[in-house]
Length: 252
Image 1 (cartoon, one colour):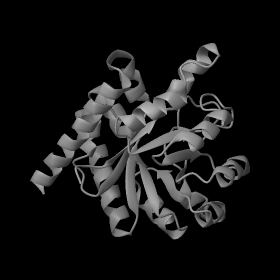
Image 2 (cartoon, one colour; image 1 turned 120 degrees about the horizontal axis):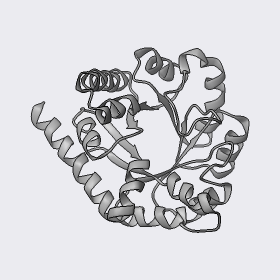
Image 3 (cartoon, helix red, strand yellow; image 1 turned 45 degrees about the horizontal axis):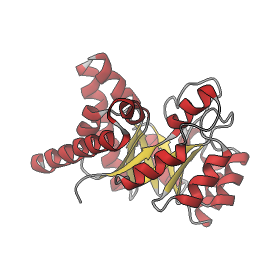
Image 4 (cartoon, helix red, strand yellow; image 1 turned 90 degrees about the vertical axis):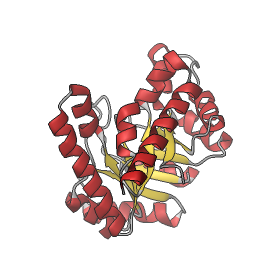
């Protein structure tokens, strides 16, 4: 292994398309290009208001991809029905508020255990790998284990924001929270992923954490691809992840 798996989120290709309407740029084309460039999986978030990815995009992705599709979704009956109809490789349950621009924070699994346990059971029975998008909080990690989710994805947004703000003390604290969350999750028998707000430098840093199985990266990557092209942006991101992984191994 040369580092965590690399999941590419193509939502914001659809954001650009939808800003004007029409068919371009095509999220499927971006997904296939990312697949060709070595993505280990593609992530798409079908929101209630269809602000970026649409139903037809999910249909097209399921039909064309050969790498796994990770379907990010809110814990609603509508999204559960869509996931059960398509049966993607993975579903990641995320919090969702219509007024938010992007996912804000992690899911409160500990506050909603019974409902979420019932919600994910048919998804697991259908063969989907279920993950819970949570804060690096031991209470949320343990609750995710109790409801039967085999995977957690820790929200890296607060860490990434501290980095962008130049708040190194806060960044260090948030990094330790992430490292501890990965450790607790791994010891609990969960597969641990990280995602949200990562750039080249923060992706390198979190890749130093032992036992991180996957990073899911979207907005920054699509933004950089405007200047570099998607394949080159992916190459640089993969290199940053591999560098971080090597640094973590050397420090162990």
